[in-house]
Image (cartoon, each protein chain N blue to C red):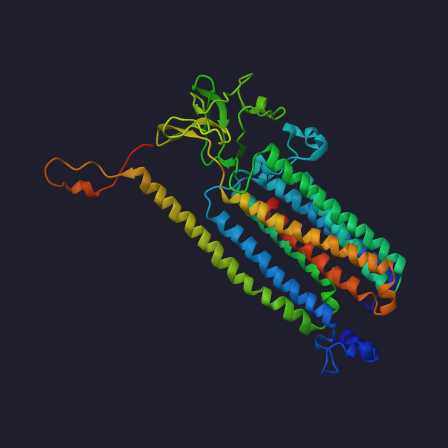
Length: 139
Length: 335
């Protein structure tokens, strides 16, 4: 518990924290609606900045919940580190799997491109050189 | 976190000999906390890895997909016709924001219950835990409505995702004549495939041509396709008759006819799987809150004189459920 705070202080702290979380959530939703708005469709940087801000605000919310509501800030450092440090392993999982997902998408596009292309029927006599060239035909 | 606070804790605990006997064989508790709280933290750590596994799978599949349904379009419904107050009857993210608030507020009332527990105030604990239970139950009710709306009205299942997204700009074909119309198709915009014969409020009028009724018989029509026709020409009676409108896109000077496709298949499985697993946590949380609420009310924890530690432990779990929702909300609804 928050030993250094009086009862009244810790009670008002809860409502302040609640207000903070609610305000952050509203800002997140507004940013999300902004980046999906029609005028934002062609402004890539706006979408990236809004997305990054939303992610940063969510991480801040997570930090606040863990450190204030779950009182991690008032536990000894060893406990906090033994719980929090292992989660940093996930950072690598994020990088590796998102990168892998992106590679799947590229492979899929490559396969679709190949399926749309087809080899021409071989010439009656012998094989011409251009048999080996893939020719694109309209879908 | 500061040295001063650590020392305070040690002094406080040295004066409570009964806490030192929690762990047999040692006279100092690891991390100066109780066995129960420490184990709750490690359970939550393992649970965080489970959720992280799910969410990372979601991310990988989303990255692997050429398009992804836009959340503002998918989650634009609300109960009691609230969405009808908005333009085009679309209330983007309004309902899920309300759900988030319910969970955040119930987290706040949980902290209040823990604080009252530390003061050994039985009535306070019961009152604030009751509000927490109401918040959790309200969230579950909202989720039940959201799910049933998606399943019954919008025909989304674990394997069918009627929310597709255009990847090219173009124009719709008139559903009746198959001629190119002035109705625009915009890349990046998400559409919902309707099932033939089902009424969708005013939406039909916005999307289709005026007063046009789509055929309910499976087949290939001039301006649209109705699902259910098999390769051998027979009709599959079990197939849901989704209507796919046709549209033209221009590419390298030539025009190609495209048909509205289903969205990425994984979307439904990921959505129902992950929000379902979270909802399951909320449901178990509500049950345990109720059990501990009843125990607290009947004076079990007053007798223990340990500052209602059990309330602290369920509090940790409840905040974790809120914490997971922060990330579920982030990836499914905000991004």
